[in-house]
Length: 334
View 1 (tube, rainbow, N blue to C red):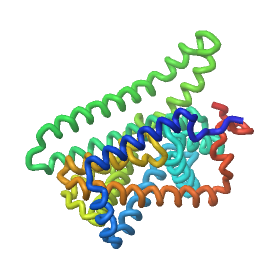
View 2 (tube, one colour):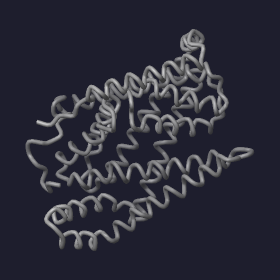
View 3 (cartoon, rainbow, N blue to C red):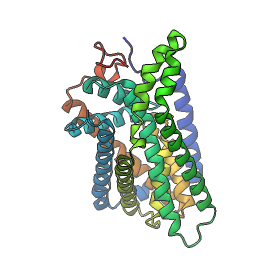
View 4 (cartoon, rainbow, N blue to C red):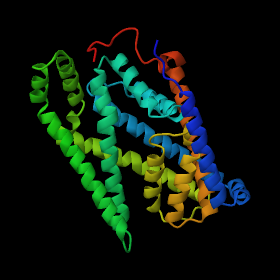
């Protein structure tokens, strides 16, 4: 049997080294006793709306995923939200987006969809939609700055990169039949790849439908806007005192530094990255670290509780979640 492993021994060691280095840098950059006092002065009334908005943003992202799986996902929004929550919890516990692998595997088995199609949606379409939403939100933030400066150039370059990547996905979709036909005419390994490539490209079909793409983009912007608002509430709770639009950049930075977790829960790496960005946006170092520690603890608590509830609601055992090769193949088999 093939199970997802938390990490090989050398990865455990690597994670410990990264964690120790991050903690050392944080201790050097901030007054830890002062940070502890700031954490004790948190305004708890802001924590509930912050966590609630974060949870609502994740629900919206799960419904975006349901739309990507449509029509198979129609009427199964609750189940897909559960799978999405479970995947987030696994991502927090195991490095290298293992939770997304779990999401692909379980969704393909339960919905009878091709794993190649679901993989395209999770790893390509969602990533590009997130990039497009980030570019739009950053453009809004930069537009309202009195003097955009070099930030406007960076946002422009990022937006162009995202648009080119989406264009490449559209071209791949339009020429999928030709590519599949060429592969089928080649060697047996290529013939094996052809139907899987067709399924993968089918998962990119959202980019070929303008109306569907607009709806998916709207859901993406709405979801990330809610998460940015959640970070603004955390800012109020921990006295960060940043401009409201600054939390867009802070939210995006927080997601980027934990996109490929190097330590369990991203501990250390998250705090170091978020503190650095918050300071760059105008926050004091001690307040920035208190914000990073407090927000991280609250968000990870939500992720783990939501994942546990989803595990129970979906009636899955831990072994079924971490099992990569199902005992019974899904219908399409890819």
